[in-house]
Amino acid sequence: MKKITILVTLVATLNIYSQAWETVPTASHPKISQLKYISDSEIYAVTRLLYQPANIQKWDGVSWNNVGDFSSTYYTRFKFNSATDIYAIKNENAPTFDNPGTNYNNISHWDGTSWTNLININRHDLIYNFEAFGPDDIYAVGEVKVTETTGRKCVLKYDGTSVTPVGVNSSAYGTSSRNVTLLVNGPNDIYSKYDAYNESIIRLKHWDGTTWDVFYNSQLDEIKGCGDFQVNALDDIYICASEINNSGKIAVGHWNGTYWEKLGDIYGDLGISPGNYGGIRFVYVSPNEIYIYGGLYLQSAPTYNKYQIAYWNGSNWNFLGNFNGNYYPNDMQVDDNFVYVTGDFTESGMYPIKKFARQIPALNTSDIANTDTIKVFPNPTTNVIYFSESIEKATLFSVEGKMILEKHGTDSIDMSHLQDGCYFLKVENDNHLKNSKTIKVFKN
Image (cartoon, rainbow, N blue to C red; front, side):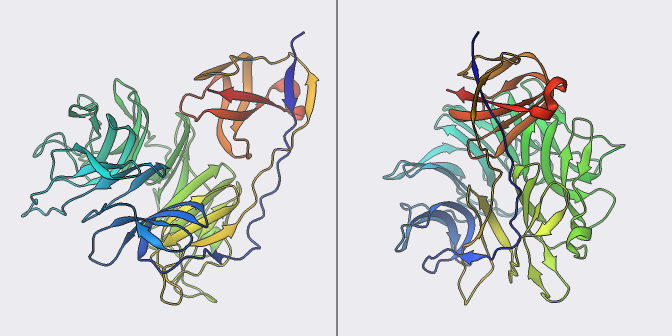
């Protein structure tokens, strides 16, 4: 009888409200709009002085230094793969209606030695977000349209030779407002923003290679909008938005396959008043660990007029320590040990990077040589793993214990979008829900 290694999963309670925020030790730097923390002696950031070009800088434990000669006159974001593989938006102009500018906007690549402009979008319109899988496989959104002068704002794809809009034959291909929403898992699996001409509600949409499908249920939806989002499956999406029936109330919502449901009550749980203070952004770790930052502006004693950071524990919203920022947090990163935040807030005249120690759900494992009840194959896999029977519930974790995705009533899991490595797959069926088992699976 073939043996399958089974591991017992023990989940630790998340207890991250009793600690204090710390300052990451670095020299003074300009405002940071995007952060990539690797260690205390290796940090990458988008920095910008007021009315000056944005730069990409690296902290080496001693000083901040520009990464090559990169600068973007208006706005930039970067995708960090390694110290010798960085992609970044290079917006060369800030166009207006009367003066579209003379420079074009590009995606640039850092190879460890120099920056190279990879593509020319052939538009004066700004780029706000992108995905880059290589120099000949790039997607971009922003103010960019189908052509230089016509069409709605859309997702553009560069294949190494030409730039083409994605899915313009579908009615929901474009948006009338600026677009910063983009997730690309492949040419036939793209998520972006949609807003109709005749309504003010902004929604999330998905390209499947044939059509753009918009996620909404006009009768049941509890939220509207399209900010940061996390896609676990087509019926399991998290997003930050606004409450649909309460003007000015920000929210985090979950698409359950039928409608958008609101996660808790941010204002009631935190005791803050509704208001538009720049909206919120979020970082999703698991259904029981979601962090929000941005426009959480506390207006009551003892911390008047202070920006806060909060988290969702699966049941309610809580403040994450006593952040008390004097201005906006702009970016957040969560790793195995800490929550990192940076932005426009200051301490002693400096723009700090703050961190907050966290605990993660732990996977304590012990080998039990037994059972062929549920078979998983192929293992290792290159893309999809299958079960020998339909599973009531399947949950995939990283080796650190972070939940990656969860599916119900399934006989397979698509892992094609994941990095190669080891994962833990927790399976639950009616016949052993009380003794759920976790199987080690490999992606290569």
